[in-house]
Amino acid sequence: MKITTIVLDSVGLGYLPDAARFGDEGADTLDHTVLKTGVELPNLAALGLGRVPGVHSLPPAEAPQGAFGRMAEVNPGKDTSTGHWEFVGVQLEHPFQVFPQGFPHDFLQRYAERIGVGGWLLNRPYSGTDAIRDYGDAHLETGFPIVYTSADSVFQVAAHTGKVGLETLYAWCRAAREMLVGPLAVARVIARPFEGQPGSFSRREDLRKDFALEPPHNVLDVLKEGGLEVVGVGKIPDIYAHRGFTREVKSKNNADGIARTMGLMQQDFSGLVFTNLVDFDAKFGHRRNPEGYAAALRDFDTALPGILAGLGPGDYLFIVSDHGNDPTWRGTDHTREYGMLLAVGPGLAGRDLGTRETFADLAATWAGLFGLEWGGPGKRIV
Image (cartoon, rainbow, N blue to C red; front, side, top):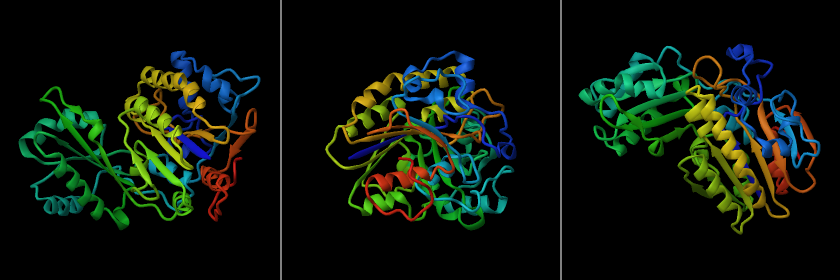
């Protein structure tokens, strides 16, 4: 048996009851995108997405081909690590650290000394594309790293590939990962290489690299220890600091991630294929581009029949999301929303999965379907 789980990164299904605490009451990534653009998603609707509570933009299928529902997030946050850790059964008592005023000056002094540079640039929450536009020239002159963060728990370092070698940038990020511990611990340190000339800088997303905090023991470990293949596609292995995987498969974009996932579904092994499709979030949500977001949704919807055709008679497919990133919302940050939950497998057609109390139900379900003991949080979905 093979379980394929695809994360539609940031395709939230409406704001959570506690969204006001995050400034997100009223956010609704899926509905607002569909209503703004008129995009049609017939295959997702056929699985039952239009039957999910709070989804008003898609027609409710009379006879859904899959099981349908939504998941509430327990973890205190709305970022990639918070949601993905909860998927695998890690519930946090405290949120990851964020730095809305930038990182402490004394820390950056120690960091600059460690990596052998005379200073740094920026150091505050900032759009990544704006960071290289506004500070790229100064970076080329000084060689100093462009350091910035966001509303998420991230320490991002941008450097020009022609000024600072790629391996040097990665080394800078590894140093930051080692230093950002205790009260300064962030979920992810992210290398943001860019290229080009003043006035026309562009990020090299294919060379981006994440250095995550390592999660505690979780369901990925349980599957691996149980002798199963655990294959991470796209940025999935990075999110978990490469813990719990038997194989890692890189992807360039959503289309490549879908193609690699479909290829893995055809291979002869028993285990988990766990994929993140990041373009919704990185290319369109943060940039508040509803038309681009809608096009990415349409592309996934078009690919969905081929994904379904790759399921064997005893296989399962879960389509989920980790948070929202409403492209019609104010600002450029993630939004606190319900996660999507669609499931296809034996006996699941037409089943209403309701509103799950935690993303960790996914972990309990993976372990249960493979007949492995799971002592962590969550209840089986199927």
